[in-house]
Length: 128
View 1 (cartoon, rainbow, N blue to C red):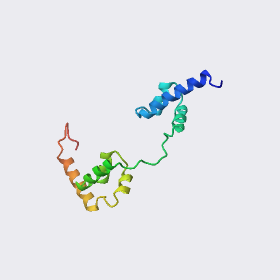
View 2: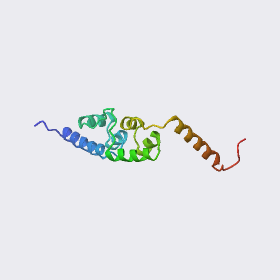
View 3: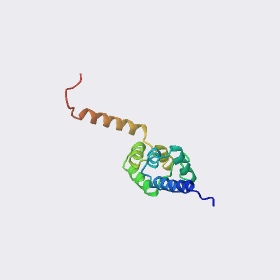
View 4: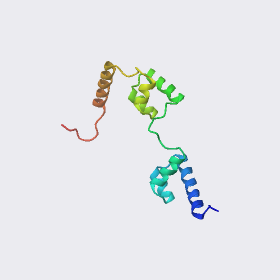
């Protein structure tokens, strides 16, 4: 019988690590601390389960694409849309080519933001 106590304990521990990984709520470091193992053990379990990040960013969902389209129609910049959706600006550039602001729009935005900052009331003594 090859099933030893240690291998059963390892299987139980790995199952707990896998459950925590799939929940997506804890970092690798926290899972390692919680299970009393090293980060390398957590990474091994993650790799065996096929949960490792391959370095590619995930594609935008249909809902994100629709929301981005509406934001672009309202005049939002790519950076603003990326912040709103919580994605990388490169994803938007690939999904919506040619939707970046023109130089004139960038200058206008800078002018408006500068005006807004000058109009914001200052609290405390003014620096001169």
